[in-house]
Image (cartoon, rainbow, N blue to C red):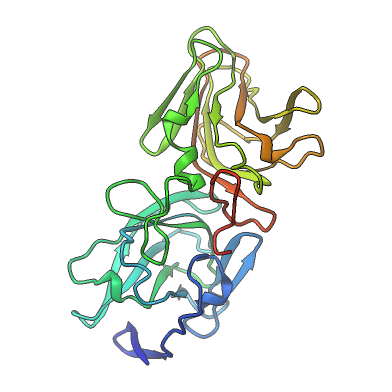
Length: 335
Protein backbone atom coordinates (compact mmCIF):
# COMPACT_ATOMS: atom_id res chain seq x y z
CA UNK A 1 0.00 0.00 0.00
CA UNK A 2 1.20 3.51 -0.75
CA UNK A 3 0.31 6.51 1.40
CA UNK A 4 -0.23 9.62 -0.69
CA UNK A 5 -0.70 13.07 0.84
CA UNK A 6 -2.91 15.57 -0.98
CA UNK A 7 -3.14 18.14 1.82
CA UNK A 8 -1.79 18.08 5.37
CA UNK A 9 -5.29 17.55 6.75
CA UNK A 10 -6.11 14.38 4.85
CA UNK A 11 -4.51 11.41 3.14
CA UNK A 12 -5.69 8.76 0.76
CA UNK A 13 -4.64 5.11 0.72
CA UNK A 14 -3.98 3.60 -2.68
CA UNK A 15 -3.28 -0.02 -3.53
CA UNK A 16 0.13 -0.81 -4.97
CA UNK A 17 0.04 -0.89 -8.76
CA UNK A 18 -0.27 -4.18 -10.57
CA UNK A 19 2.48 -4.48 -13.18
CA UNK A 20 -0.12 -5.21 -15.85
CA UNK A 21 -1.45 -1.64 -15.68
CA UNK A 22 -0.19 0.17 -18.77
CA UNK A 23 1.09 3.75 -18.63
CA UNK A 24 2.12 3.88 -22.28
CA UNK A 25 -1.04 5.81 -23.02
CA UNK A 26 -1.37 8.52 -20.37
CA UNK A 27 -4.77 9.24 -21.90
CA UNK A 28 -6.18 5.87 -20.84
CA UNK A 29 -9.05 6.77 -18.51
CA UNK A 30 -8.58 3.56 -16.53
CA UNK A 31 -5.28 4.94 -15.18
CA UNK A 32 -6.91 8.09 -13.76
CA UNK A 33 -8.56 8.61 -10.37
CA UNK A 34 -10.78 11.50 -9.21
CA UNK A 35 -9.91 13.46 -6.06
CA UNK A 36 -11.64 14.73 -4.04
CA UNK A 37 -14.92 12.79 -4.21
CA UNK A 38 -17.39 14.60 -6.46
CA UNK A 39 -15.06 15.55 -9.31
CA UNK A 40 -15.14 13.51 -12.51
CA UNK A 41 -12.47 12.24 -14.92
CA UNK A 42 -13.90 11.28 -18.32
CA UNK A 43 -12.82 10.99 -21.96
CA UNK A 44 -14.14 13.09 -24.87
CA UNK A 45 -12.63 11.79 -28.08
CA UNK A 46 -8.87 11.85 -27.49
CA UNK A 47 -9.20 14.42 -24.69
CA UNK A 48 -9.26 13.95 -20.92
CA UNK A 49 -11.98 16.00 -19.24
CA UNK A 50 -11.78 16.95 -15.55
CA UNK A 51 -14.86 18.54 -13.96
CA UNK A 52 -14.83 19.90 -10.40
CA UNK A 53 -18.65 19.76 -10.15
CA UNK A 54 -20.95 21.96 -8.07
CA UNK A 55 -19.12 21.65 -4.74
CA UNK A 56 -15.42 22.07 -5.43
CA UNK A 57 -13.14 24.90 -6.55
CA UNK A 58 -10.06 22.67 -6.55
CA UNK A 59 -9.39 19.20 -7.93
CA UNK A 60 -6.46 16.76 -7.96
CA UNK A 61 -6.90 14.19 -10.75
CA UNK A 62 -4.29 11.43 -10.29
CA UNK A 63 -2.64 9.21 -12.92
CA UNK A 64 -1.27 5.82 -11.85
CA UNK A 65 2.00 4.63 -13.43
CA UNK A 66 4.17 1.52 -12.98
CA UNK A 67 7.06 2.01 -10.55
CA UNK A 68 10.21 2.91 -12.50
CA UNK A 69 8.32 4.09 -15.57
CA UNK A 70 9.19 7.77 -14.99
CA UNK A 71 12.90 7.07 -14.37
CA UNK A 72 14.09 9.08 -17.40
CA UNK A 73 11.19 11.54 -17.57
CA UNK A 74 12.27 15.14 -17.02
CA UNK A 75 9.20 17.01 -18.29
CA UNK A 76 5.57 16.62 -19.29
CA UNK A 77 4.17 18.31 -22.38
CA UNK A 78 0.46 18.58 -23.16
CA UNK A 79 -2.28 20.74 -24.65
CA UNK A 80 -4.66 22.26 -22.11
CA UNK A 81 -7.81 24.40 -22.10
CA UNK A 82 -10.02 25.38 -19.17
CA UNK A 83 -13.54 26.74 -18.71
CA UNK A 84 -14.51 28.60 -15.55
CA UNK A 85 -17.59 30.45 -14.29
CA UNK A 86 -15.46 32.83 -12.23
CA UNK A 87 -16.12 36.49 -13.12
CA UNK A 88 -12.50 37.39 -12.39
CA UNK A 89 -10.40 34.55 -13.65
CA UNK A 90 -7.92 32.99 -11.25
CA UNK A 91 -6.89 29.62 -12.61
CA UNK A 92 -3.94 28.01 -10.83
CA UNK A 93 -2.68 24.81 -12.48
CA UNK A 94 0.14 22.61 -11.17
CA UNK A 95 1.71 19.18 -11.56
CA UNK A 96 2.29 17.37 -8.25
CA UNK A 97 4.91 14.68 -7.54
CA UNK A 98 5.39 12.92 -4.22
CA UNK A 99 8.79 13.11 -2.49
CA UNK A 100 9.52 10.21 -0.13
CA UNK A 101 12.48 12.17 1.25
CA UNK A 102 10.35 15.20 2.15
CA UNK A 103 7.23 13.10 2.85
CA UNK A 104 5.07 15.57 0.95
CA UNK A 105 3.99 16.62 -2.53
CA UNK A 106 6.28 18.86 -4.57
CA UNK A 107 4.47 21.46 -6.68
CA UNK A 108 5.47 22.33 -10.27
CA UNK A 109 3.47 25.39 -11.30
CA UNK A 110 2.71 26.36 -14.89
CA UNK A 111 0.72 29.10 -16.56
CA UNK A 112 -2.37 29.00 -18.82
CA UNK A 113 -3.10 32.43 -20.27
CA UNK A 114 -6.87 32.54 -20.74
CA UNK A 115 -9.99 30.33 -20.74
CA UNK A 116 -11.52 28.77 -23.85
CA UNK A 117 -8.22 28.59 -25.79
CA UNK A 118 -5.98 25.57 -26.34
CA UNK A 119 -2.40 26.11 -25.20
CA UNK A 120 0.64 23.81 -25.38
CA UNK A 121 2.51 23.63 -22.07
CA UNK A 122 5.83 22.05 -21.07
CA UNK A 123 6.30 21.46 -17.34
CA UNK A 124 9.84 20.66 -16.18
CA UNK A 125 9.82 18.09 -13.37
CA UNK A 126 13.39 18.24 -12.08
CA UNK A 127 13.71 18.51 -8.27
CA UNK A 128 16.57 17.24 -6.06
CA UNK A 129 14.19 15.63 -3.56
CA UNK A 130 11.99 13.77 -6.05
CA UNK A 131 13.18 10.34 -7.13
CA UNK A 132 11.50 9.85 -10.51
CA UNK A 133 12.26 6.11 -10.53
CA UNK A 134 10.21 5.59 -7.35
CA UNK A 135 7.04 7.31 -8.52
CA UNK A 136 3.90 5.18 -8.74
CA UNK A 137 1.61 8.08 -9.65
CA UNK A 138 1.53 11.78 -10.48
CA UNK A 139 -1.29 14.29 -10.43
CA UNK A 140 -2.60 17.63 -11.57
CA UNK A 141 -3.87 20.34 -9.24
CA UNK A 142 -6.42 22.78 -10.69
CA UNK A 143 -7.92 25.72 -8.78
CA UNK A 144 -10.51 28.36 -9.69
CA UNK A 145 -12.45 31.01 -7.70
CA UNK A 146 -15.73 29.20 -8.45
CA UNK A 147 -16.89 25.56 -8.68
CA UNK A 148 -17.88 23.94 -11.99
CA UNK A 149 -14.33 24.27 -13.30
CA UNK A 150 -13.73 22.18 -16.43
CA UNK A 151 -10.22 21.36 -17.64
CA UNK A 152 -9.48 19.57 -20.93
CA UNK A 153 -6.08 17.92 -21.53
CA UNK A 154 -4.82 16.12 -24.65
CA UNK A 155 -1.56 15.03 -26.32
CA UNK A 156 0.14 14.18 -23.01
CA UNK A 157 3.78 13.33 -23.65
CA UNK A 158 6.81 12.47 -21.51
CA UNK A 159 10.11 14.18 -22.41
CA UNK A 160 13.65 13.12 -21.59
CA UNK A 161 16.66 15.16 -20.51
CA UNK A 162 18.36 17.57 -22.89
CA UNK A 163 16.71 16.81 -26.23
CA UNK A 164 13.07 17.41 -27.04
CA UNK A 165 12.45 13.71 -27.45
CA UNK A 166 9.73 11.43 -26.22
CA UNK A 167 10.51 8.97 -23.45
CA UNK A 168 8.74 5.65 -23.18
CA UNK A 169 7.01 5.30 -19.79
CA UNK A 170 9.05 2.13 -19.25
CA UNK A 171 12.08 4.40 -18.87
CA UNK A 172 13.62 3.68 -22.28
CA UNK A 173 14.19 6.38 -24.86
CA UNK A 174 12.02 5.86 -27.91
CA UNK A 175 13.92 5.39 -31.15
CA UNK A 176 14.33 8.27 -33.56
CA UNK A 177 11.67 6.64 -35.73
CA UNK A 178 8.88 7.80 -33.45
CA UNK A 179 6.65 10.11 -35.47
CA UNK A 180 6.91 13.20 -33.25
CA UNK A 181 10.71 13.17 -33.33
CA UNK A 182 11.15 12.07 -36.96
CA UNK A 183 8.66 14.51 -38.49
CA UNK A 184 10.11 17.45 -36.55
CA UNK A 185 13.72 16.72 -37.65
CA UNK A 186 14.67 19.49 -40.07
CA UNK A 187 16.98 17.27 -42.17
CA UNK A 188 13.93 15.30 -43.34
CA UNK A 189 12.33 18.39 -44.88
CA UNK A 190 12.84 20.00 -48.33
CA UNK A 191 11.82 23.47 -49.56
CA UNK A 192 9.61 23.88 -52.65
CA UNK A 193 9.63 26.03 -54.68
CA UNK A 194 13.14 27.49 -54.59
CA UNK A 195 13.19 30.60 -52.42
CA UNK A 196 11.08 29.32 -49.54
CA UNK A 197 12.85 28.24 -46.36
CA UNK A 198 12.34 25.40 -43.90
CA UNK A 199 13.99 26.08 -40.55
CA UNK A 200 13.63 25.27 -36.86
CA UNK A 201 12.46 27.86 -34.32
CA UNK A 202 12.67 26.30 -30.86
CA UNK A 203 10.67 23.06 -31.11
CA UNK A 204 8.60 24.35 -34.05
CA UNK A 205 9.17 23.95 -37.79
CA UNK A 206 9.14 27.33 -39.53
CA UNK A 207 8.16 27.64 -43.20
CA UNK A 208 8.68 31.04 -44.86
CA UNK A 209 7.50 31.79 -48.41
CA UNK A 210 9.86 34.75 -48.76
CA UNK A 211 9.37 37.90 -50.84
CA UNK A 212 8.37 36.28 -54.12
CA UNK A 213 5.94 33.45 -53.40
CA UNK A 214 2.36 33.25 -52.16
CA UNK A 215 2.36 29.47 -52.27
CA UNK A 216 4.75 26.92 -50.72
CA UNK A 217 4.95 23.14 -50.60
CA UNK A 218 7.37 21.98 -47.90
CA UNK A 219 8.02 18.25 -48.32
CA UNK A 220 8.92 15.62 -45.71
CA UNK A 221 10.83 12.47 -46.69
CA UNK A 222 9.72 9.27 -44.93
CA UNK A 223 10.95 5.64 -45.02
CA UNK A 224 9.05 3.49 -47.54
CA UNK A 225 6.31 1.59 -45.71
CA UNK A 226 6.43 3.82 -42.63
CA UNK A 227 2.99 5.32 -43.32
CA UNK A 228 1.36 1.89 -43.77
CA UNK A 229 -0.84 2.20 -40.66
CA UNK A 230 -1.13 6.00 -40.63
CA UNK A 231 -4.68 7.28 -41.03
CA UNK A 232 -4.30 10.88 -39.86
CA UNK A 233 -1.79 13.61 -39.04
CA UNK A 234 -2.20 15.75 -35.94
CA UNK A 235 -0.21 18.91 -35.22
CA UNK A 236 -0.26 22.41 -33.79
CA UNK A 237 -0.15 25.20 -36.38
CA UNK A 238 0.05 28.98 -36.47
CA UNK A 239 0.45 31.32 -39.44
CA UNK A 240 1.42 34.95 -40.03
CA UNK A 241 0.34 36.75 -43.18
CA UNK A 242 0.65 40.28 -44.57
CA UNK A 243 -2.58 39.98 -46.54
CA UNK A 244 -5.08 42.70 -45.64
CA UNK A 245 -7.91 40.21 -46.02
CA UNK A 246 -6.58 36.91 -44.80
CA UNK A 247 -7.06 34.02 -47.17
CA UNK A 248 -4.96 31.19 -45.84
CA UNK A 249 -5.50 27.85 -47.54
CA UNK A 250 -3.62 24.95 -45.92
CA UNK A 251 -3.58 21.36 -47.17
CA UNK A 252 -1.75 18.06 -46.81
CA UNK A 253 -0.73 16.45 -50.12
CA UNK A 254 -0.17 12.73 -50.77
CA UNK A 255 0.85 11.22 -54.09
CA UNK A 256 -1.39 8.59 -55.71
CA UNK A 257 0.44 6.21 -58.09
CA UNK A 258 -2.92 4.99 -59.35
CA UNK A 259 -4.13 8.49 -60.27
CA UNK A 260 -0.60 9.74 -61.11
CA UNK A 261 -1.24 12.97 -59.23
CA UNK A 262 -1.30 14.53 -55.79
CA UNK A 263 -4.42 14.07 -53.64
CA UNK A 264 -5.38 17.12 -51.54
CA UNK A 265 -6.55 16.90 -47.92
CA UNK A 266 -7.81 20.33 -46.91
CA UNK A 267 -8.03 21.58 -43.35
CA UNK A 268 -8.91 24.89 -41.71
CA UNK A 269 -6.97 27.31 -39.53
CA UNK A 270 -9.36 29.90 -38.15
CA UNK A 271 -7.19 33.00 -37.70
CA UNK A 272 -3.57 34.19 -37.82
CA UNK A 273 -1.16 34.39 -34.86
CA UNK A 274 -3.03 31.81 -32.75
CA UNK A 275 -1.87 28.25 -32.15
CA UNK A 276 -4.48 25.69 -33.18
CA UNK A 277 -4.43 21.90 -32.92
CA UNK A 278 -5.51 20.23 -36.17
CA UNK A 279 -6.23 16.61 -37.10
CA UNK A 280 -6.17 15.82 -40.83
CA UNK A 281 -7.67 12.48 -41.88
CA UNK A 282 -5.67 10.93 -44.75
CA UNK A 283 -7.96 8.15 -45.94
CA UNK A 284 -8.47 7.96 -49.71
CA UNK A 285 -9.23 4.87 -51.83
CA UNK A 286 -6.58 5.76 -54.44
CA UNK A 287 -3.70 6.47 -52.05
CA UNK A 288 -1.59 3.47 -50.99
CA UNK A 289 -0.12 4.61 -47.66
CA UNK A 290 2.45 1.78 -47.65
CA UNK A 291 4.02 3.06 -50.91
CA UNK A 292 4.55 6.65 -49.82
CA UNK A 293 8.12 7.96 -49.76
CA UNK A 294 7.16 11.51 -48.82
CA UNK A 295 4.27 13.79 -48.00
CA UNK A 296 3.92 17.55 -48.09
CA UNK A 297 2.06 20.59 -46.94
CA UNK A 298 0.55 23.18 -49.26
CA UNK A 299 0.19 26.70 -47.84
CA UNK A 300 -1.34 29.61 -49.78
CA UNK A 301 -1.90 33.28 -48.91
CA UNK A 302 -2.94 36.36 -50.92
CA UNK A 303 0.48 37.94 -50.32
CA UNK A 304 4.10 36.73 -50.15
CA UNK A 305 6.05 36.64 -46.85
CA UNK A 306 3.72 34.01 -45.45
CA UNK A 307 5.14 32.34 -42.33
CA UNK A 308 3.76 29.06 -41.00
CA UNK A 309 4.86 27.44 -37.73
CA UNK A 310 4.15 23.76 -37.04
CA UNK A 311 4.95 21.72 -33.92
CA UNK A 312 3.99 18.46 -32.19
CA UNK A 313 3.55 16.60 -35.49
CA UNK A 314 2.11 13.15 -34.84
CA UNK A 315 0.92 10.21 -36.94
CA UNK A 316 -2.29 8.53 -35.79
CA UNK A 317 -3.75 5.13 -36.59
CA UNK A 318 -7.41 4.02 -36.88
CA UNK A 319 -7.83 4.09 -33.10
CA UNK A 320 -6.31 7.56 -32.73
CA UNK A 321 -3.08 6.23 -31.20
CA UNK A 322 0.31 7.60 -32.20
CA UNK A 323 2.12 5.50 -34.81
CA UNK A 324 5.86 4.85 -34.79
CA UNK A 325 7.51 5.43 -38.17
CA UNK A 326 9.37 2.22 -38.84
CA UNK A 327 9.97 1.03 -42.35
CA UNK A 328 7.38 -1.52 -43.42
CA UNK A 329 6.17 -2.42 -39.93
CA UNK A 330 4.17 0.12 -38.03
CA UNK A 331 2.52 -0.42 -34.69
CA UNK A 332 0.53 2.02 -32.60
CA UNK A 333 1.91 2.85 -29.18
CA UNK A 334 0.97 0.37 -26.59
CA UNK A 335 0.16 -2.43 -29.02
